[in-house]
Length: 308
Image 1 (cartoon, rainbow, N blue to C red):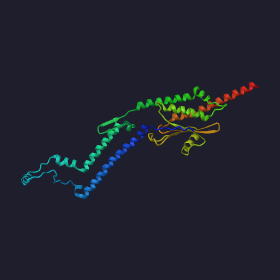
Image 2 (image 1 turned 45 degrees about the horizontal axis):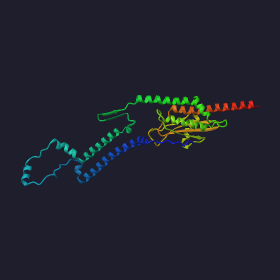
Image 3 (image 1 turned 180 degrees about the vertical axis):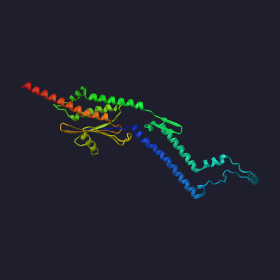
Image 4 (image 1 turned 90 degrees about the vertical axis):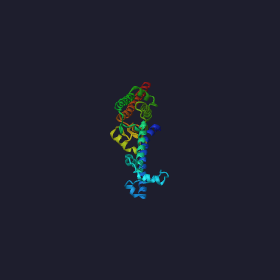
């Protein structure tokens, strides 16, 4: 069994955790606004129930300095000047409830700006609009080009499997007129793994080969592949979830032995071309082994005839 492991990079973990980090920050700000409002409301209702529902006139002036009775007479005779600011704006701004709301909105605004300054946080963002600011990402053409490049790379791998180079490499595994199917399969899976790892596929996966039985959690996929004769694929729903894997399972019997190839990845989702590629790999190896063993047997027969 191959013991290769897939290492998840720091940036993959960062891309996975940052959305949760921002969600936690927004939740924390909203929770602070709600709790602070409840505490102020409870205190106001306890000390001055009337002020909880109505705006009370503030007749005290803490900043007033010591004055003489003559000054009191002059002040009392002069009507207090009230402006639109003192009547409307000042009570609104000085309200503890409103201060909490303003402070919370300010923190949310800063948090959203921070969200926009870290590209990895909105990797899947297509359009974002805040007030009169609108950001839109259009990667349709780039995605189309990448799809063509990826498909072309997989097609070249398929051509390599069916070419003379792969047949020659398979012949190198000949030992005492026989070739171990599993050994050859592991070799070409390692080459495929290396090809997927590079640009433009950038797909990292690990592989394991089981005889007859596979882990219980893969039982349904193994049965699906066994019944259909094709590779079975199960991709995770959230591609950025680094705690779950995507699987490609292929059941392949050869020479009275059952082989179950398990391809798994934390970061790569398998498509129909991947199914065809790994199916072709198994069938091509089987065909090459049969041809080589037949040629070896035929050669041994001719040598025996010549000796006689």
